[in-house]
Length: 200
Image (cartoon, rainbow, N blue to C red; front, side):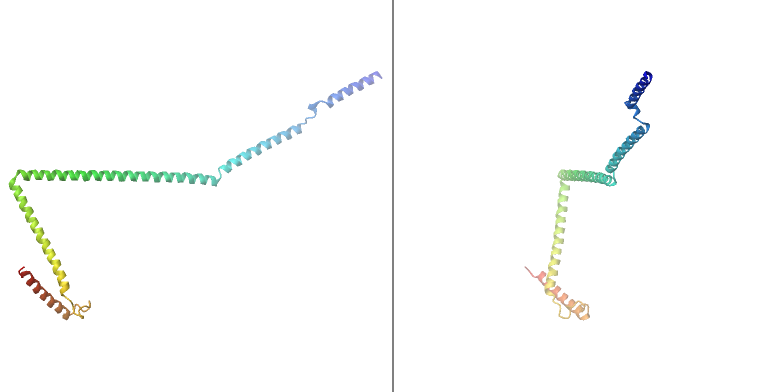
C-alpha cells in the first residue's frame, strides 16, 4: 500500500512538471509559421518602399524635371547669346569710332602738311589759288546753266499748250501733233533768244 501511494505521488509530480514546462508548449510548426509571417511582413514593407521610390521617379515627374532643366538651359543660352551680341556690338562701335578718329587725324595731318607746303612756296600758293578760282568759276557756270535749263523748261511748260486733239497721249504721235510741237518749240526758242539779247 505504501509503495502504491509513493508511486502515485511520483507520477503526480512528474505530471505536474510536464504540465507547467513552457518549452513543451512551443511546437516546431508554430516556429515555422511565425517565421513565415515575419518574412511576409518584411517583403511587404520592402514592396511599399519600392512603390514610393517608383512614384517619385514616375514618367510625369521625370518629364517635369527634364522640362525644367531644358528651360534653364535655354534661358542660359539666350542670356549668353545676348551678352555675346552686346559685347560684339560694343566692340564694333569702339573699332568704328577708333577708325573714324584715325581717319580724321590723317586728314588733318595731310591738310596741315599741304598748307605748310603751300605757304613755303609762294608760286605754288598762287597757282593753287588760281586753280581754286577757276574751279569756282566753272562750278558757277555749271550752276547757272543748270538754273537756266530749269527756267527754260518751266517757261516751255507755261508756253506750250497742246490743242485738244494733241492732248490725248494716243494722238500725240501723229504727224499733225508732231508738227504742232515743232512749230511751238521754234517759236519758243526765238522768244527766248530775244529775251536773252534784250539789254537789261
